Length: 602
Picture 1: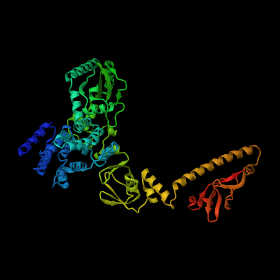
Picture 2 (picture 1 turned 90 degrees about the vertical axis):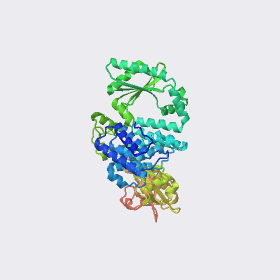
Picture 3 (picture 1 turned 45 degrees about the vertical axis):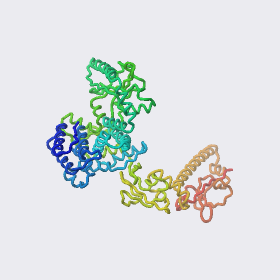
Picture 4 (picture 1 turned 30 degrees about the vertical axis):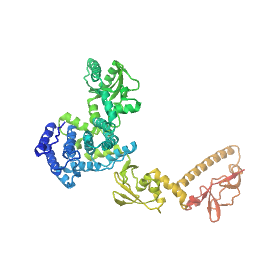
């Protein structure tokens, strides 16, 4: 890793640049020239500036750029890492950065600054997940997230220089947002380090306890693992499979979560050790799992096949836990490509391509974006590439801010009325206007990702039938519908009427079917069907289950006993039509005046 000194002289900054290029020697001359120009720009704009810790301002950006270079990202990513906080510096304009370093670097730096300026309030797991999704919604280029992850990682590595209270706040944000985000992108190495560093500052006592336990009997543990490694090597060699095996203690945060889950101290945990076996093909992975289970007894329920069923972030591997010399030993088996994906996620595309041809990779030429995309062997334009990614991660939701910085998740197509009811029913009932990013918008206008929404209310306002027609969320629809039923005497519940008509039609249909069946039976017995049908009824009509109600039979259709009928009220009282009567069907707003009627049976 690049050694960054604490000195701040012109000579030392030149040494730092030379050391950077010696450490990361795969850049072309043209790329070196671009990076040097960005370095000179950073030094000029931040001359004399220091961080809260007293160190020169430019050291953190250089470390971020180094992390990205170490991960073999493209030159645009590395330069963006170097300039990721340049818009915080007074006197730096967007036009200047765009002119000097190009559209791609400008957009990455601009969007990174946007994220840096966010108020992140995550008090629940659901809210934290909404923030992670919203981060993808607000960017056009996934490298923004990668730059921000490098920034967070470097800040966590150097967190000891800030006050303890702030250490805990930063650690909480990293564990809620940034570590799961790295996991979502399949970047396990960064995720694990972020988690361990967060634990170090959020719960230092537990961290030191776990560290001490892991350090205990180091030599004994090494001897134990060496025996296990030697046994696998020997068995694999017998059948002609070449493997690479590494051993390690589990990450501290992983141990901490096991302690919480099992409610025991770290000293009571035995499965703290793991082996990783790397081979060449999927078939070899399955052969090796057989070898391992032949050497040691597998523990029940601890075998996982993530090759056949990859995790959502593209992770693939075989996991098993065996009992070796009386102790649980976790073993992971995967191919080199799977390992590359597991450790680096998104970055694996740069690493894999460069490993194949030793050349830099143009992001626009990437054909796949790990298993998340499931877009194998396709050439996608840069625009399509990231559009596909965002669709995969975001689905059919949008993520908008409250003025306080809270993130609200809504269905795509939602408007300010939906937003207001999501905040609180009382806010929804009094909405009269809305602002998006400080500008007045129609309350029916579809909201967009990352807008800051402010609701304007009036104590005299109330829900309307028009609002009911335009909302997208069930909560808003139910609340408005309930208010109108209770408070608006002119409101016609068309939904209920439609259901009622549907039920009435179904009832009439059943009645017709029954009558038809009876008619057929009487006909087969030699009876006159029409006379038999009429003979079942008194010729009188029952209204809303009540007898002796005054009514008039419509002359236009002259309904006969037994025929399906409908009734409605008019100025002259209750009028009865055949259900099939065209005159009845042409009456306007008839659904508001209908009543239930039926022929009285003998």
